[in-house]
Amino acid sequence: MSIPLKRSAAAVATALLGVVLATTAGQAHTAPSAVQSSAARTAAPADSTAQVDRLWGIDGDEQSVPAGQQVPVRLKVRAIDADRKPVEGAVITFSTPGPGLKFPHGGDEATATTDQDGYATAPVLKAAGSPGPDLVTAGAGDKARVAFEITIT
Image (cartoon, rainbow, N blue to C red; front, side):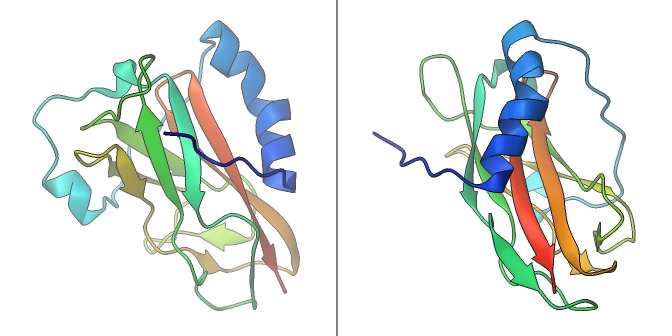
């Protein structure tokens, strides 16, 4: 199966921020989160995050949202292994390093666990900051990363 690729500011950011981690298996910080998707509560018993070779951004890139509103489309990723097969039970950490976006509990990080087809969807984001572009990254362990750009209007 071929997954279409598109270039965006988020793709460029991923290239700049994630290539070293993706190719060298460098260190990454993952903090625990109080928010998990419903998929996380029904996930496979074993954590298979280490099996993830790549993350694909499936939905939610290049959105605009008015300040104070919820981001219209939830961020969705797909985790695949080195054989290009979906990885079930991988913990995906979504992070909003900028000040503009927040998860429901008011934090900058939230987790979701991949389903049997390798998909994970982030909790709803809210535009809590000033107008301008912001970035959300999704990571699986210390090597697979993807970024999403969301502009607060």
